[in-house]
Amino acid sequence: MIFISLLSAVTPVFVKTGTDLLLEVKEPVVLKEGEDFIWKVNGSDNVVKFRGIKQSIPESYKSRVEFSAQNHSLLLKNVQKGDSGVHRALVSGDEDITVAEYSVTVLDPVSGVKLTVKPCSSDSTKVTVICSTEDSLISSTFTCDTQTCSHEGGERAEIITPGASLDVYLENSSVICNHSNQVSSTRDIQKIEEFCVKPEASKGSQNNVTPIVVAIVLSLVVVLAII
Image (tube, rainbow, N blue to C red; front, side, top):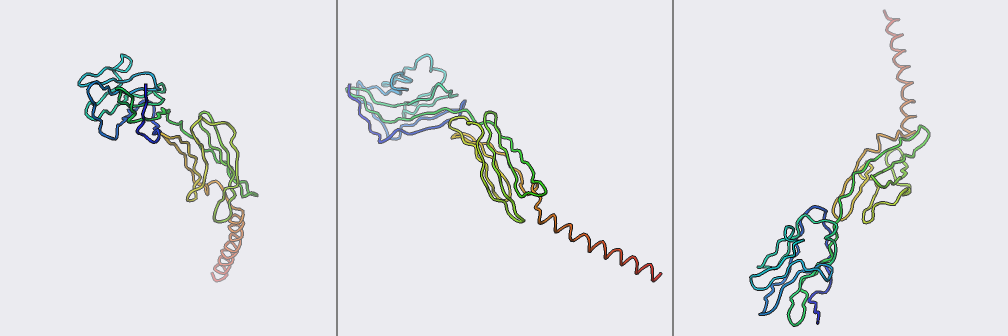
């Protein structure tokens, strides 16, 4: 049997578990007499076989797929991890001609994140943040001066779920922890300035208190002397 592909590459598709996925055939297909239109998964299992006005769907797919005889698209409903794989649409006659091909990856949404910030001590300008998920965590250190904070570095303490990423970064005076994959994203945000008291600012405020107190005492003395 001869296989002919009209495609230059397989199209990668990422889809969230439990959602629906529409696989389309981009170009119009006209079936000749004796030809079948077939959607296959992983090169062997037929999902749909169509000829004329008759379509054949295996029992395991009957409640989970919809096939359009007009444009030959395939709707997979409530996709699960087992639906991952290469889905190929082909016209089968004297030879098999591939007219659409998708590499489908079904992923669970990422878990939520929790951002923990360890405040600066009175004699330090460094603040440490720890971002954790159900199965991983990452820590980073930031150095803050009187106006801004900069990323100093950090380390990943555990391996996160394959295909997902866990990042900690600064944006508009806030520290952000972002957990994401190709189908979902969660984040936690906290103002970093609320956790880091700059030594310079602290000293400045202490120095300003003494002149104010002296001025108030002298004013009271003058008032009492006049009275």
